[in-house]
Length: 133
Length: 82
Image (cartoon, rainbow over all chains, first blue to last red; front, side):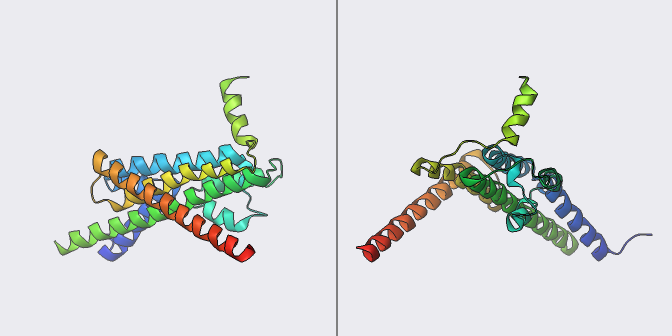
């Protein structure tokens, strides 16, 4: 059975959003915005890795630093795996490395949120224009 | 130590970053990243020259704005404490 167009569009937007969340830049990639996707992927992954380098994976702390964790998980669901790993308390980090690590990883997450919203918006615009044409 | 062990070790132990004024320089790569991603979502078409120009302009604007705010806050603190 063929789904009605509106339901199809919601499914498409959801797919774009989820892909963009799973891999930074993937949302733009499937919309054929390859240059944009590569730039977004490189910038977000480098920022996130710089944060982990500065403060270690211990900066991802879903127990004692929940607000930071909410921003960090916008990077990718992989952050949840790292969160489970650090929940054991084997990777303690304090002071300036912790601050810098948390800021870098959280900003990377918020930038990815911006990219997710942007990818979904572009997908919505294209679908709307296609229907109008 | 193998390369893989070294790579994993860099992400499992924090770097030694002291609280001296130089540590504020950690701000620069973050601002660059913000400028790159923001411009990547905003420019209509990505062409190397114009994209770089727009990114550098935004990067510079953010840095200048932060310096102005820092100077304003320093002056305010000086006026209050003097």
